[in-house]
Length: 163
Image (cartoon, rainbow, N blue to C red; front, side):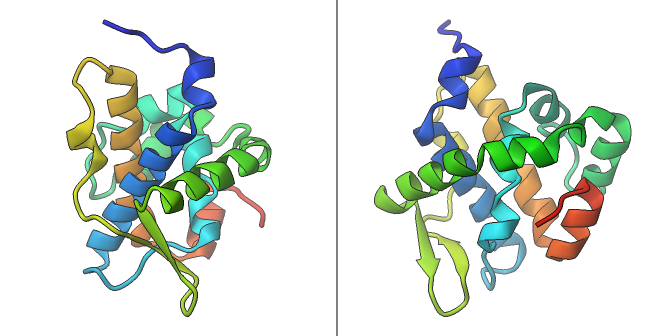
């Protein structure tokens, strides 16, 4: 089995694009294909799913009620998230650029929403040997579901983030 090291995972724009795509697909599906996330909603996604402890906590939680249970169970999810989000902003933008260029995502200028171009999860494309990547994608899908049910203000309060 090919094990990726932390640097390879953290610096991989394609992996970031897949995670953002998985998040956006789940967000869009859960709003009955009516709304995609805005850029501020996407900003904490990579800092959360590329954080090993956070991704491990999130990836296997139930969709209903799992977000708050995850935060309650693992307090380290919130520790340093603001700083990680700020320091990973450039990586998030690079991953978004990759997702737009590879036609995974579209940007709707009229609503400022990011819309998935495909409706199937990128998880189906990933070989089962890559456990770390599958965990990241599953965590992104969970966040997409949970964030679609919340306003930006609720996300900010729950995660203790400032914009």
